[in-house]
Length: 222
Length: 394
Image (cartoon, rainbow over all chains, first blue to last red; front, top):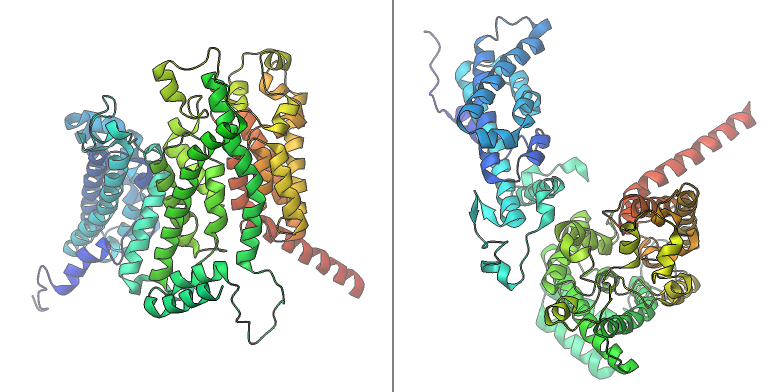
């Protein structure tokens, strides 16, 4: 091999992993995949399972498309990508149904809709089609984690204030038997159970994120 | 006076750079600032933003006072006691003033924090919202809920858009909408409109036959029939709804008190008559359409004019829809804007039994559409003039 082999975790590769977590987050900066962030964040366990599912599809999709990148004719590349992603989504769906049936039921249609998640097609188009497999895997992991991070953060606040629980454990006491905080008149926030609250929470996240990293603020916006 | 002036001058020194905005805002509430614009075109007027806000607050005073009396009145009707006018008022004041204090305390604290972080002088916009918020709450709303809702309203409704004068949505209504969706048990139902109703029920001191439902709540759950049965069963009729001695949010019930405020706002030209008139017309039109297609639905049968006098329609017309920041800015647009809000408000109120009070949502929807309406009005004007020019030059 004539060219010098690149280290597995070179600076460039590390950037592939870390960028999507903050500086180029798929949800908060690119504003992709918002629909599922709204729908599956009422409970933490749903959000976590959804994140893992998307992470799996994204990594595998990126890897497969990257391996095939020189074989796919550009005229039908979208169709090929769709077939690959659809196959992966079906695998995920079946696994979820087999092992975590309850979560699969409450995620319902949104597992199937991973196929339309803009982040996945976006990464296939933008990265995997033009880069080597290892970089594509890292890119998939980074974006999957970036997506999952937002989902989990949003779900944390929604479940905590919407139903007073975290992963099913009662944090604020039992709301029906009026123990804990509820005995002094606290009530769960019903707005947190509705999808629009995710938008508000994501917006607050973006606000804090941009406040902390001024380089993200678009100079031309003002 | 000189004593106060000296006090503030000293406070400026003590506060230093960081807390300058805090001292300044208190200073300018009491003293008109004597610095003037130095250059450029500007309007000479004795009225600045703070005085305008004060006018609106003055206009709300009749509603507040009546609301206090009405809270007492309804409480003692429910408990079956006969007490003097003064006792009723006192009871109401004890129940209402904490809401006012919490609203102002929390809201101004948030404003101070943002003023200090951003280093700008304080915005006075909250002075009006802080008084509006208690007036549109049911009297039984827990104080901590008001506090949370105020934080939400001020931060999400106003500060994220850039503070006073930049908000898209009416802050007071954002606050109420938040509570409406977050804690529906405290915003709709028939246990929350009479002061201390839950306690009285627990102690068994309620008078017989007292219903805790608002007229709108009653109407929304009426069996099919004619509106006469509603009035025959003690429904709030037209003259009672003008007077306002019935159940509802604290400040919204008395049309007389609200009209006093409206007259004051129109004379001082704080409120736009275009919006007020078109809002009324929009509500009337929708209520009239319902009258025509009512069938045996009692809520739809309520005569259009009586419909508008119930609930928060009049209060919204005078104090909410006229908010100049969230309203349409063009004169023509103001007509569309007001009409839209009234029309949709009554539509939601009557057509959706889950939201017996739809005026809030109608006004919020119109708020969102306001800039779109302006855009369309301006573009239509440009097109019209272009056509005229083409004709003249052709």
